Structure formats: C-alpha cells, structure tokens
Length: 149
Image 1: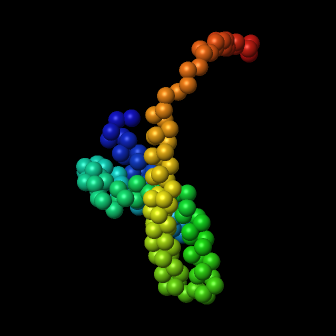
Image 2 (image 1 turned 180 degrees about the vertical axis):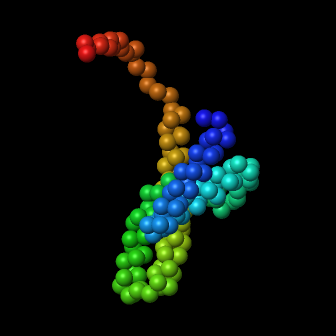
Image 3 (image 1 turned 60 degrees about the vertical axis):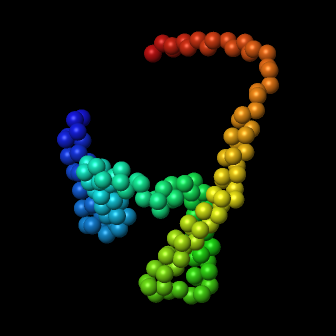
C-alpha cells in the first residue's frame, strides 16, 4: 500500500474501533483508538521525534522492563491497602489509582537501580571473558524431505 492508502486505512480502522467503543460503552477501545489517532497525527506531522526527547518519557523507557515485571505486584499491593482502608467512592478509587501509578514508577526505578542495571553490567563483564577453547564441532547438515501430498 502506498503512504496515503495506508493512512486512510489506518484512520478508517481506528475510527471504526472508536465508534464501536463509544456505541458499546467500551472505554478501553475508545482510549486506545484515541491514543492511536494522537500517535498517528504526531508521526505524520513530524512532532513525534520531539516528544521522544522528553526526559520523563526517556526515563520511563529506561525502567520499562522493570515496570513491566513489577507493576502487577505493586498494583495488587496498593489496592489491597485501599480495600483495607475501605475506599469505595469513585474519587477515592481515582486517588488510589494515582497512588498506584506513582508507587509503580518508584518501585520499578528502585528495581532497575538495584537489580536490573547491576545485572546488565554483570552480563557485559561475563560476556567479555574469553570463551574456552573447544574442539570444533562436527555438525551434520540436515536434509529436508518433502512428503508426497
């Protein structure tokens, strides 16, 4: 597909997802399609590269794997505390979501600093060691036979 056709196809698909989300009350579909429109518009206008230079976004990229590994644990712990406190109103739940987000980022940053970064440095040091001299391995070539249809 050419660029214009790809753009039109993308806008059509995202629009369909947006309308389906609105008509069915699916907030996830609405938010995802809206985010897709924003990202697509940023890419087409050339502004996405300036957005990728934001320090806070680069920080989230740096800790993203730690965030991926730990977010479920942290969210569960925060909402366990919220349940024990008795947060029931929508405003209280919103506040606990904000607390959860902040705790996830803080925990992931600590995890990255104490575990992920030292592990990456260790793997680099171990990778720089000279591999032991091993005799050459005789690797037999595999032949692929086609079975009759």
